[in-house]
Image (cartoon, rainbow, N blue to C red; front, side, top):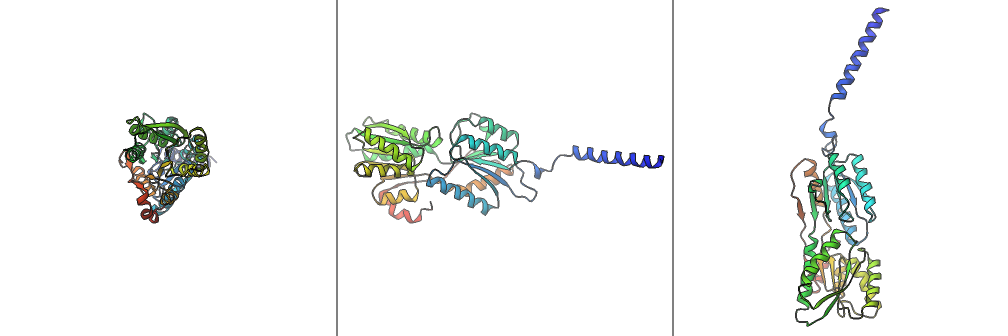
Length: 331
């Protein structure tokens, strides 16, 4: 009896010792956030703004297709243009212990808390398309996207050349993007930086159209009712410009002639409108970021250093270039 009790005690002590050893052993590197899964695959959590425009749809498709091609597992969330939805998605990715988080911020402000949570969890973050205004740049590894201020400047430079011989005044209405978003803030600032240098250019109305075709039409209708002497429309994206063109035509005026139209993005529909003479110039903003994002994802997951900012190549297209460029547009 005593011998059986001794054997039982010995077994209990051995099991306890094994359990203690297991508890004190760190998890393998492959199980830690940012290190990839046991099979070497990388999981990327991506929080998209929404599906507010043709540009955004092309951006989403590029990311999804590039992830599949690169062998990266993609967890995708559509925020429907609401910051609270993106924050919830990012926190979900943290709980799921994804290897990398990427997102295109709905607005610039209000991200520090959730980005610190990702940093504390050891999950690197990549900003795509839109930036944040956080002073702590250690909260994200890199920004991949366009220079929106440069895009605004390009729009302003075309305008000043187009009206170089005009004595003025030249009355401009502006359809801004989503209030508080990086492209809206920066495209407005870059444009103003150029045109405010010449007193003949007057921005007589400026209002958000939320980057959507329907809202662009609605706001342009209001502009046309309030202002009879509009010479130029500057739209922060093509969808708003296309909606505004509908409003201009319904008001009995000719877009591209009576009212010059400047737009940003470069979707196919905008190039069609240029071939029809309804848009005068489009400043390109390239949505096909997927391949570059997957390359950066692999590098930050492996702990490699990456540049703090990675830009995409873009151009400016006028009516005389539209017909030739249209067949090659991928979005």
